Image 1 (tube, rainbow, N blue to C red):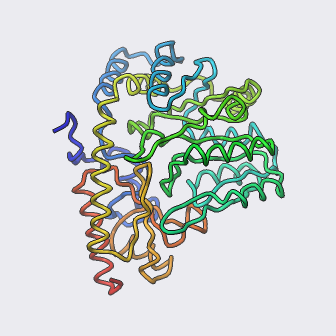
Image 2: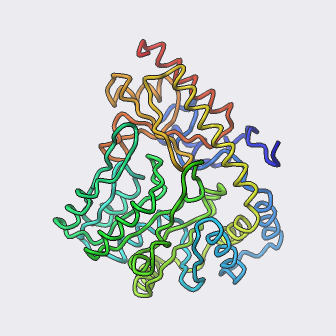
Amino acid sequence: MGKYNFDEVIERKNTNSLKYDYAVKRGKPADVLPLWVADMDFQTPREVTEALIKKAEHGIFGYSEPTDSYFDALGKWFTGHYGWTPDADKFVLSCGVVFALCTLVEALTEEGDAIIINQPVYYPFSEAITDNGRKLINSGLIYENGRYTIDFEDFEKKITEENVKLYLLCNPHNPVGRVWSRDELKKISEICLKHDVIVVSDEIHADFVYKGHKFTSYATLGEEALDKAVICTAPSKTFNIAGLHNANLYFANRKLRNAYIRTQNRKGYSQSNIMGIVACEAAYTYGEQWLSELLEYLEGNLDFVREFLKEKIPQIKLVEPEGTYLVWLDCNGLQITDEELNKLIVYKAKLWLDAGNIFGKQGEMFERINIACPRSVLNKALNQLYDALKSEGII
């Protein structure tokens, strides 16, 4: 029995929760069970809450900057978990990784420049490119035997043909769950260095890696690779504090760092959210045991999904995740259309998941489900899906 109770169901309705309170505004029925957006239904570690309470009781929320202890906490966490020790003066704080991606696209490329991604991938990647007037180049992942890999031949070919300037890397990959190996990342770095492509590595899910797999930060590939890269990290997914808007970007290259800072300044963003600073330092200082128990619980949830599908809905295949708490489901075996699938999930199963097509055309007939919830909630969701499929005569 661990210290933390992840089975506890905590009421989130009427708390300004995007996940629970905005179904109707997002075009969904009011009674859908939400397992879509990437936040967890678990309370953050008590030490984080206590640090926030202490700051709130102080009662002054003026402009704030992180102190040495903040960067010490980051350094210890990254050294212990990722195997690299960052220099404090090479960090730049941001209000979030998505904001950072958009700002990096603007800062490091020109309008009309080509930027490459690997779809199906987290949909803000494509939005960051197209909304900033850049050209989206997709080197789609290869899906074979239930596993995704990078098509390196296609990747390099498109970089060359399209004169790609920037690569948005997702590691661990959202939504397909791959944790790219060191060899795969080395191949990426070789290609990008060869063709002078800057790599932006989104590592926000780095702490969620399942047994038998190992996360490799792009920061550990050597000085040459790191000099042409930006490492995007945040405590938001790990400790369920996304609403506090805190991210930590790492720039080994001063020119890239200054370009980013200038662009961020033009957007009027300078000092960080004081509560984000407080929560980040507390989480990285005191959150070790909480994360360890959380990972064990998520492993149990993953086992539950695997067995449920195998026994009751074998037509839906679990794409075995190596990392993240976002599970990718292959629904091709249902023998219905993508449109029929999405309507069934929302209006028959009464579930709010992320339809695979929002991650790119390669995501059609897939669904992304967030398993970071109490197992009773996950059980309810999967049974609603089973009952809907059964009632429609699909299984």
